[in-house]
Amino acid sequence: MRPDAVRRVLDAELIAARERRGGEAPRVLDVGGGSGVLAVPLAVEGCAVTVVEPSPNALATLHRRAQEAGVADRITAVQGDSDALDQLVAPAAADLVLAHGLLEVVDDPKATVAALVGVVAPGGALSVLVANRFAAVLHRAISGRLVDARKLLDDPAGVLGGAGEALLRRFDTESLRALLADTDLAVELIQGQGVVSDLVTGSVLEVSAGAPDALAELELAAAVTPALRDIATRLHAIARR
Image (cartoon, rainbow, N blue to C red; front, side):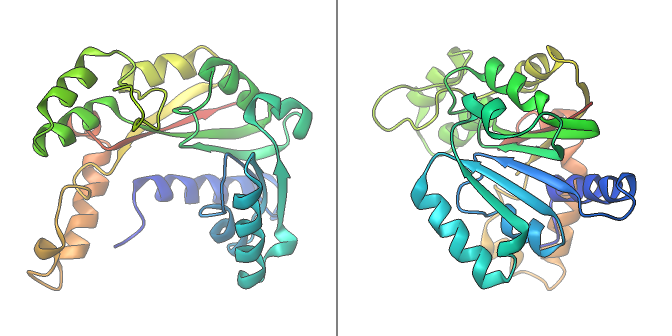
């Protein structure tokens, strides 16, 4: 399938950053970047990427992936937590800061966002990707987990609790917007990821050769349609300095 709405926005950010830097490599900071799922492809495309990640195992996998892709010289790995970001990364050091799948698991999302804002360069952007509470409600209801669906709906943080719950919180559009608006960055975009693509089965895509492209186009349109965006599996925001 074609690049989704999130990647399309990130690609545009990187093009703009390269232009601001007079053709030099955009500087990307991936906080909680894990094993390099985002970092390695971005480095392959010519970005200078720093990954801040607390897990040494994840960083070892990142190093291996970077070597295999031939971009080890473009990736800097830093072991550490997001709450110590000001001690790990220089202020205003990145043209694009990624916090994908991060705010759901940190102890204090407000403090984390403040730290993220501090490392965004002038003209740069913060990209946040979070789990959507309302999507979690719908997905559990569809799968027959009706009690869990109601718990997620009733809990403003969208948390079930219990041993099987990996996330400390989920967001909706308004709570995400409010969190980012309480900074000196301007929220430019909130869109969805996985609006319809996460609901379509593989058998649907096998109906015709054009089905994958049709789904990709539908997903891009749905991502910015408010009523559909608000039930996307994940919510993506861009906030600019």
